[in-house]
Amino acid sequence: MTAAQQALGRGEATRLLTPLAELASQAGARILQCVAAGLEARAKPDASPVTAADEAAEAILSEGLARLLPAVPVIAEEAASRGRAPNPGSVFFLVDPIDGTRELIAGRSEYTVNVALIVDGLPVLGLVYAPALNALYAAADGRAVRARLAPGTRFEAAAAVPIRARARPERLIAAVSRSHPDQRSDAFLATLSVERRLVLGSSLKFARLAEGEADVYARLAPISEWDVAAGHALLAAAGGRVTAPDGGALAYGRPETGFRLEGVLAWGAPAES
Image 1 (tube, rainbow, N blue to C red):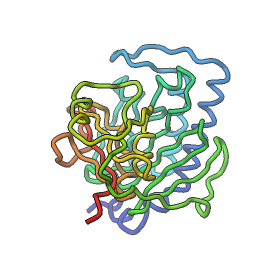
Image 2 (image 1 turned 180 degrees about the vertical axis):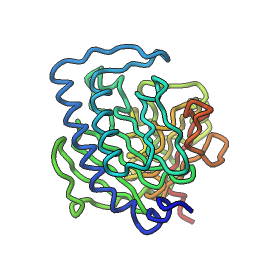
Image 3 (image 1 turned 90 degrees about the horizontal axis):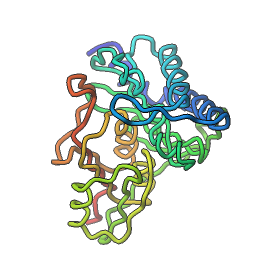
């Protein structure tokens, strides 16, 4: 076991929540500054959009994480898209500076800053921060919380409130993607008893499951690791479950796939017996 893994086993993940939340707050403030100045979207090689806000937020997060834990590699979306992803090793950070860039460009509030810490292929810590909603969702060491956090302000850990996924009801609320619908996911949801669909952008879908406002989220199409890891950590700590489409475990830190997952299936808490 490495020194980093031993430290995390002694509650390091919980201790990291406050400095990581404050990094996310700084990144959120920079995003809003970029929005106020006017955003111009550009297309990356994979045709997905990127803006100055994505790049500025990623710089804040990557530099801050390097100061906080200099020995831990950072896999960040925009750097990875330019072929600048280090070898992740067994302990690394996954960063999506803006999950939901399309929502940001459209003027919606449904975008998040995602930071996850991965140990041995599994997310042990996750932050999902929605700057436009002043909302932070975070998880570490089996505890999931929600807190009000205005961009650029300090995180008060004492003000965070625990959240839990709700027990699965007979009629489900399904969180579905606003900008990335796919036929396989629609077909899967058609096999369930879905009362209502909650259309959302970004990792807020995981947050809604974690706080008991939705029951299932299916993305049965390829998706990047940094889009999922923070929400995975959050929902697992809140009593939910996140798997591959076939029900198997998700594995993070695979540069050979371009840090891509085949899909994701997320559930709230099991039904009460």
